[in-house]
Length: 490
Image 1 (cartoon, helix red, strand yellow):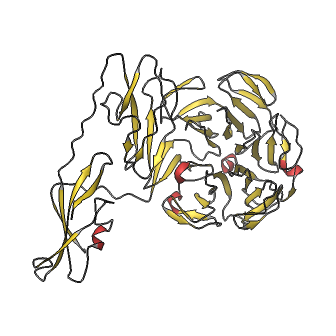
Image 2 (cartoon, rainbow, N blue to C red):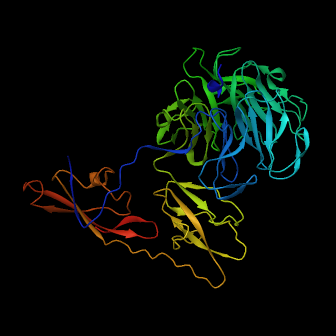
């Protein structure tokens, strides 16, 4: 296998000037990096996204920072991809609870870069902000993930199976004794199946380990699971705890090729079909994923991800995912969900803030940035703009934006943006005599979206080319607080 393989009806009359918003697609695909088909994608607690770049020029680990500032000793700009450090044939990436970054290569070498000076696994003295090699030629060579105890799990293709690097303080792993700070073979320790073309691993909220078998080998291609003690069923499949079980298999070569795998906080499993260039999802209960209804306990193809996936995948919050596509790396979000990214607006500012995602009006995350000698004045939509939102103010989440912290020096007052609401809009819709006003709220016809209130209905002779009928009337007023229209009167 090559390295890349791993690797017209109703008439609406508006008396007033207003513009209808553009119709959105069901899924918004935003390119966040130019890295193509990466295996490894990880995200730390601050929202920074790390991507393994193992092909082409400038190989290594690319970061898409959540905020502007310093990261592992490098000056970074929010939302702008940057090569964090060089490493030939980078494959998998993982971040532990301390924010330390681990990366492996196709040759099985494992590296780490830390934020502070510390002991890391077999190395007693790792210097901060310095890529340090931990193992040579014997470690992971695919996707990696930490469990809640700090043990590092990873895949090793072509006969390698699943390996684990236990933390010093960890006890038995899935009921088996293992050597801390050394590479252990999980396949050799556990009973059950024996996946040997492992591309990636992931954990659910209960600590169950999930494995993707990319090609037919000792076992058919598919998704396998190692349940924790006492687990008897997962996603409708009977399983044996502390053993490797097939969750789903695709024995016909060339049908799916499961590669990258990730699990969100609600235990929805996402895996990439390398052969189909898309993502499959399986939730524990029927739910909407990327604006598509997905049944429980069955992997369903996400149509909104078609063409945007190749190998790696990362599940974010609110049912959004990041995929390593065949030409770039993308963030896929539901059309109804939007993201606010917070920018400290100063290289000297301390702290970090995770981007906020929502599909409805809600309070902005409280500011956690600090700038010595200055007072946080609020959020602006440009680095030097007026204050558009106070700390914790309601944001409508009807569009994605970047908000910049504005800092006031002693005695300084930063002006606040004064919003003037548009004039009320009178809206009328004519309907036949045997109809009512319910169809007037059809999203294709009602540009105002959801409103509180309804329509007033009156008979009129003039509608419908003089044959008579009814007219649905209402007056809409704009709310500055929620940035939405509402019904003033019927």
